[in-house]
Image 1 (spheres, rainbow, N blue to C red):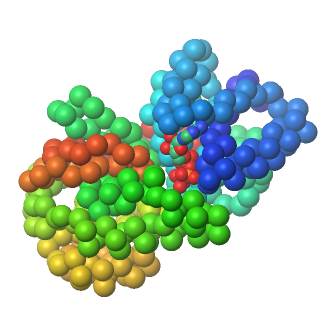
Image 2 (cartoon, rainbow, N blue to C red):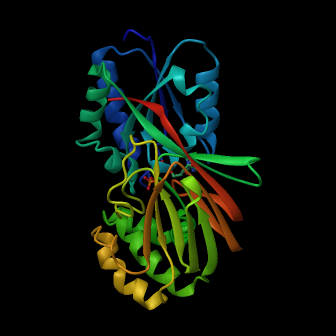
Image 3 (cartoon, protein in one colour):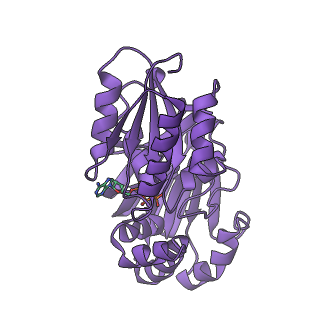
Length: 312
Ligand SMILES: Nc1ncnc2c1ncn2[C@@H]1O[C@H](COP(=O)(O)OP(=O)(O)OP(=O)(O)O)[C@@H](O)[C@H]1O
């Protein structure tokens, strides 16, 4: 047992279409071998990881070591349940298909290697989180990767239910789900006009907005570097908007986007900001770390500097 006591695991064995179950078995075996004291909670339904994180982190006034074994969606649910971030140290063993969280943070190696790093670590890395709120601040959701409006949100929403994701995951081509859905959505979606107000009152006007994404990490959508320069330790979110160009031109820009060479291209606006207000002419779908947040017209974004304490 480490100096802070027990390890608490929140595990989504269904992540990566069930492959996470094998990873969890391997992790359990290693924990047993090392005699590590732990409690494990397996998520039973959507939203369960939030309930579990809230319950585990609010039942004690001690510091809790919470280890997430799951995909980006599970991690997002956990972040939205943590009762007190100052008393929670989080370990991450990514098992999902998208894995933008692990990729963006620079987590490398196998799940077992990551487990051993966590168990042997005496280092904490403090990273920023983001928060998106709507309904005049009455509703909010924390995110670690990104929160987008429009194209990427619609793609995430479709990916949650797409049968093609299961199929492509099964043949190790899970990331292709997002590519196929992006192309389909780009040509079927409606654009809108929008205005973003950033720090110091800087205004970004967007006509025919296809999407506006607040990035905390570099990648979303299974490895697309929407904000190649994003830094989760700078206290700012990196905005990437696509607007003012016809959809067919956006389609032609997709290879540049996928390789992170889009930042100077017409139609792409990049800006860093601690806070942003976004107002759309008509409501669009919003996501936070790929989780559906409904359709909204007015949103507020803020960076929560160094809120997350990662066991590193
Ligand atoms: N037992 C369960 N039954 C159904 N859904 C679940 C269950 N446990 C968790 N979930 C939901 O599954 C969703 C996806 O899980 P997760 O993100 O861990 O895996 P993934 O989709 O394979 O990974 P990624 O998001 O990295 O692509 C989460 O939004 C979560 O709410």
